[in-house]
Length: 250
Ligand code: BEZ
Picture (cartoon, rainbow, N blue to C red):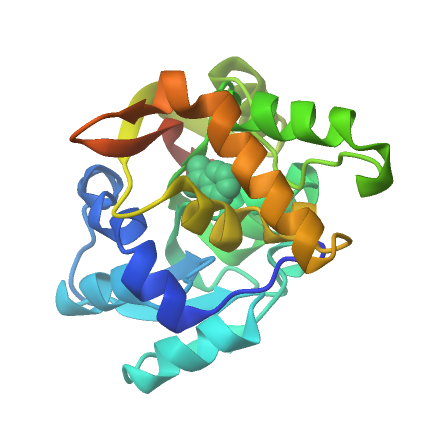
């Protein structure tokens, strides 16, 4: 992931919905007591703690030192590791990942590491942004950059594949795909879309100064208001989740 900075306090207060909405993927994982689970992209550890509460032995890894520190403050075993460079060898019964794989833009490197980390027959269960995820916001961000050549090039830091493309990659890395599908999930925000942009689109605006960033946020809100804002209900974002369960073949 390039240039994205994370602030655990802000994440907890304004993006708590990310972990709160993780129940379906937790249920798909169905963690068992005593099994060894790698939580890939554990963030501040909110879901890692749920895996621990289920009795599993859990190691959390995340590329953000600030998030790993927040997870450790909860008493979790967490380490700063780039998901593209997992160096585990047949150590886990399951690898779990929620809302993190879209930040890892070389999926083959990630899948190779997950495959090595799992014992034969181990499960890889996750959920992340799939094709069409936050498309209304992306279109608006692109339009704002197009209107301001001084903002520089518009580069997306995310990987949002179709179910078919990701299933093919999983199979190419020796996984048997048991479940995979896209789930549109319009998601209400607790506050303004500008707050969401400040948390999640940081990597897109790192080259902008404060005035440009404010202009970018107000234009994105203006361009999306009709689709993503309802008077009296506030903002929602057009999330589309790609949820899957796969097994590493022996
Ligand atoms: C997501 O969880 O789908 C997401 C997170 C950050 C930016 C875009 C999408």
